Length: 197
Image (cartoon, rainbow, N blue to C red; front, side, top):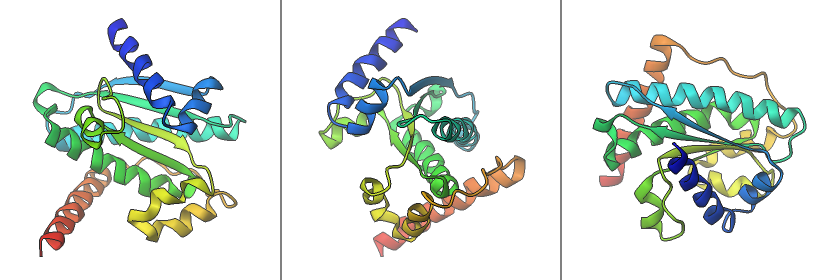
């Protein structure tokens, strides 16, 4: 575990040079790091587990922001089951959970990033993280609109979130959560088919 924490700290040092928000959060002592063991027996169960853990962390991040922290940030490193550690499974699990979290929390000025070992190396920008993770942070009103270029239908909700916080959402449970994940998988597959047409 100490080796893993050393790798996380080294990764933060690399990333802080490239990400101004991360640097500010780190310097202000407002960054939380969690390592979560995911035990889901298949990709759907693992996605539910990732979403649930990140949902709770998102609520905590919102609370920290409302309690006066300027740059609250929570990074959740995910230790996936061996059978789900290949890049395609990891990417699918993170992408679906990320999309659901983004939809749920845009009205609360939260942003989510998804990172896995080979992604950053392929992009040529960053050192690889020691494990796949989801990053949760408070949005910055003007600067962060660029993160909605791929889903501009969410931009008005993000813009209004800074002056109009709605009540915090409840965690979907059981079949409701399973249905959300199936809907997201179906949407992603439809998008892929449409791009091929």
